[in-house]
Structures are given as structure tokens and as C-alpha cells.
Length: 172
Picture 1: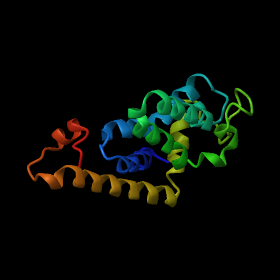
Picture 2: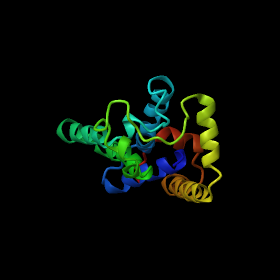
Picture 3: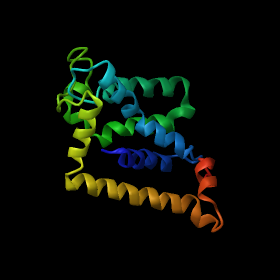
């Protein structure tokens, strides 16, 4: 899934809370596994043939959830957005990564070599040729647009986009 899809799925968790969490934090948390794993694929796991590494594993996500449940309950909305990344990427189909490190410390799901910037860009451009990717990402963009309309613009016709982006949460 591409960034708009991850953000949209992560923002779905916002509807679970009476006190609305900051949408910017939810969006960042939903993207965090990729933000962590893409550089790791380029710098540490250069032979992994995947950009889905440690931050795409169930044990890591379970550990973050347990820490939030025990010590940081206010972080739960953001942890759920973080965990939504596994659902959006269908990680249970990629068992070596999903259960990392149970299959070994350097064993991840093998997709194709994408451990250089050029190879990564080429791979993601190749993924974009699939119509189902476009459909999902377009639905995500429509949902994100609807949220923007619902949360800010429809509330005040003179509301500035700049102000909406800087506000983060208006508890609506």
C-alpha cells in the first residue's frame, strides 16, 4: 500500500475515541513502519530483497502495544494507527517478516531486490501499474478529502487550509 492508503487506514482508528487524537500524529504513526524500514533496507539489511523488515513484524507491534497498555495509555490511538500498517500491507501473507525474528535475524520475506534507492523507486513505479493499487489509493484519497471537508472546511467557510493543517485536531 502507498502512503495515502496507510494514512487513511490509520485515521480510521480516530473514530474509536471520544476525545479525538491529533490526526497528524495518527498519520505519522500509520507511516512509521515504512519510515523505519525503508532506511534499514538501504543501510542495514541490504541483502533482504524487501523494504518490509523489523517494523513490519508482529512481535515488534505487539511489544509496542503492550508498552502502551502498561505505561502509556494516552498513546493507544497512535499505537493502533501504527499497528494498522500491518493490516494494510497484509503482512500475514509474508510469514518470514510477520514473525521476525523467529525464522532468523536476517530472514525476511523475499520480494525482489530493492535495497538501493534506484531499485526501490523502480519497484514502486512497477507496483503502480496494477489497477487495484490505483483503485485503493484513489479510495483512500477520497476518504482523506472527505475527512478534510468534514473536520475543517465544512465547519467554517472562511477556514484557511493553512490553519487546518497547523491545528491537527479540532475534536470534531
